[in-house]
Image 1 (cartoon, rainbow, N blue to C red):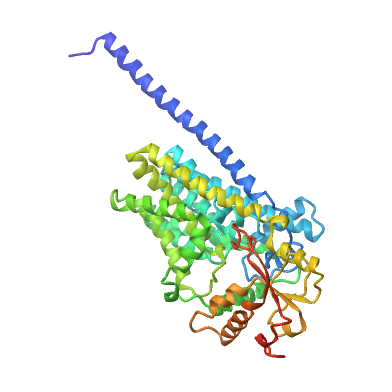
Image 2 (cartoon, one colour):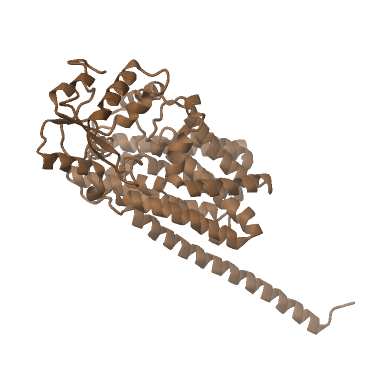
Length: 509
């Protein structure tokens, strides 16, 4: 039976009402997204830029980065994207001395961390509801992993933002395989390679995932691969053009040096089985995100995978597990080098955010929000405390130096950069000429003495520090310290009565 005129009017107005309601909902969500991004920017920036002008030299790699930024030829043991950006920042602010180039480089890293937090939120919002996306992006932004490493003139914040951009490009490519999205994805993969050589592995995996997940054809895959290579080439060319005396041979030699370093590693070797395969999980990942956050995140991830079989949670959690497993397999990353697990934090927190939105939130949204807030408070408290301890007044190194100064001690040696001029020993063979040793590395060698298959010198150093344990004059530590060069534990040993601990004239090298 044909509808009456009145019924047709009702149908039309009803459809308009539904359309208007949907449009209003989208508008509200867009407003929420803008407000969330502004809030995340403020939160992330407040931590990233707080104490950014902390003393130069407590991060041992920064002096070399400053020299590169000032125009000294890059050695290419690390990819050049950070140096290119720092040189550009130095040019913008008319940097003319060591301190101004240092701040230019640190500012680049701080901005990269802020950008990473924003892109992390934009990616997570594709899978999660507004509240949980914002909560877990905030957890990411304030975590010690992101907040602390935003301060150092190092490649790690650049790699983190490159990974986040690559994931954003991937989800866009899944939604629409346009030429723009293909190029965007290729550029993102190239930036990760030029941020840090480890980024090449991440880019390769994302490329394979895109072929399968986005069902890329041969031509589309070629476009992505070509764009990636052109991006890498462009960054290296810009780097070489902004310095003199470098060329292709410099790049090859630098890459060769890094490959040798990857094979030979550091002075200690962290073997997989001696840490039960959990060395980096316990010593790096948990401090980087805090214990409550890791426990709650893993619980939600397990529920989402086991109970709901959420493929996206499984994918991101799987990526985190692969990164962590590769680090655990490598004996080259020492305990204390938290920055190596930053990519793990990206994938793990993405998986947690999705799990809380789709599994925990679907069952009980107040519980999901409450648990998210607990993680935010735990990570935020730790992140802020660590960043606060970067200040000269809160740093244990300077406390130790002031102690020596007040005691009138002048004949001493240090075994790690202190952030101010101090006589340093590199191989401990000159300890007999000093009255005191200020050590930041004692924990490394005491730990190394309990590991198997180390270089003989590690056991010799461990024996010396065990002997020196009865000659400790002072020790300086803080509750939020020993994380990524923040307020490490410092011991001062009195060597005058400990000559028997150090074989006279014997080189420990």
